[in-house]
Image (tube, rainbow over all chains, first blue to last red; front, top):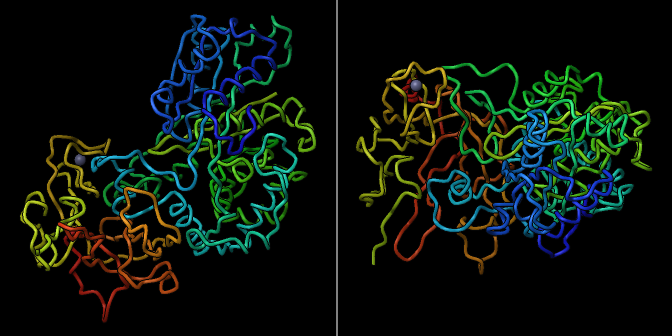
Length: 385
Length: 178
Ligand SMILES: [Zn+2]
């Protein structure tokens, strides 16, 4: 990875830095790589739309197969999925996956111009509905349905900041108190500035290979990817998700028994042949503090409505039964959209290898990542040792 | 010079009583509002009865639809209950239109669940409605509103406001039923 922050440089530099670090970690040369998959960034002009080739050019053209993918927040997981499929399909032995971004300051916004046929453009034009507005709608709903409080939400930030303080790659590395969260400005009632993740620059990369290749190169017990979930919702989607202005109507067709977010993890568990009881740790998208509590429920750590209790009981803190966001999460990193799903897998890798330093989960064997990308991209990765 | 009232998006809601729009109003069906009230306009598939808002005019998106139907304009329920709500304490980025020289006035955003359509529709609350005035489950009603104004146009939109006086008229929102 490249450390996250506001560095003011091109995403290409962050990505190639991360790529070289991943190759060095794997003990491989760039020329050993048979395929490169880039997770696209949508805010950096033309090169960002062809990230695979952009990173390949920056590393030095060497004739590798190339793919560029975009799935908003799920871009990194889609890139992992592409790489894994190529390996399982026998198209490549070693695949380099790279994602990086130079994020703008403040709210994410759609591309410019008049685009009334674009739902993402419309939600800003017609409603001024920013991403934090959606996070706040979920937070308010949790308060009404389950009795969650702003103090519960603040404790997520306290927990993740404590973990991030132990991670040299995180952007924010100082502990945060509940009082500091409560003293920060309201962005979208009931969420405050410290409840919502920042936008950041950053880069992350992974080297994936076949098991046979890994063993041949002296890795008898590598971290293995057991599942990659890339599911779409099931009609009718009854929860208002970014960037929706309305949900599907459930008047004629009943919604599936599980929410879309829950289906993301379920698909990964089914593919991996494991369940939430097998997890040593999880990395989930804490775009807001309240959303992290929802993910506890959606990845099956507890029943609906019990997320805050799980947090209060310390289950998801470092030292708890199933630590969540041991990396510090987006609360400590901020959003670098095409990189963050890869950063989650990086954290699983270090934890499963036992090399996560002061934030190590003792004896970690199984981990899951979970995230959701704009317009119905759901992704989760299960890694095991 | 008189400015024209014009919907911020064509075809998503009926003309409001203020009138004055021409081609910018509902795209067909002459407003589609049998009782003359202000309504959001969706479309309904004649084959499976699925309702879509914002309107879907290309093809039915229900994967279980038997097919062969047509999408016809349908007004949505005027009243519903709050699914959730929030506000915007900071100025949203473009394409939201606001005067950068004026102090930012937070607006309230409400997600309202329509019973007949079994769907949630987001909207800004009417001016003056604050989050402190709202609770999940409260009944809200749809009213015409103004999003912003420029030299040529008054851009109209829909707003949610707490349902006023008395009970909702029974059956008044029944057009949304299949
Ligand atoms: Zn249909």
